[in-house]
Image 1: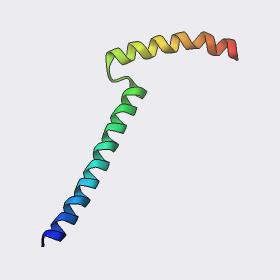
Image 2: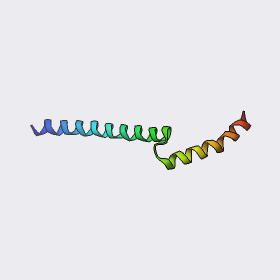
Image 3: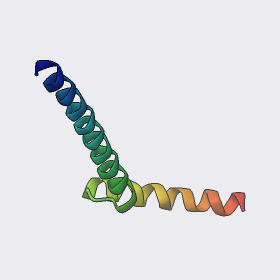
Image 4: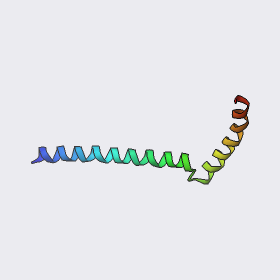
Length: 59
């Protein structure tokens, strides 16, 4: 009884950790892509505007 419960708890914990890690990864990638936070948006737009002349010079 306890052996089975311990195994199922271990499996559930592994699944939960995978789901939580995946959710964190998805939220971080979405914030990077979409710029969910206004500060991230400002930083991204500034970074892109600073990078554009460099890309043009390289091209």
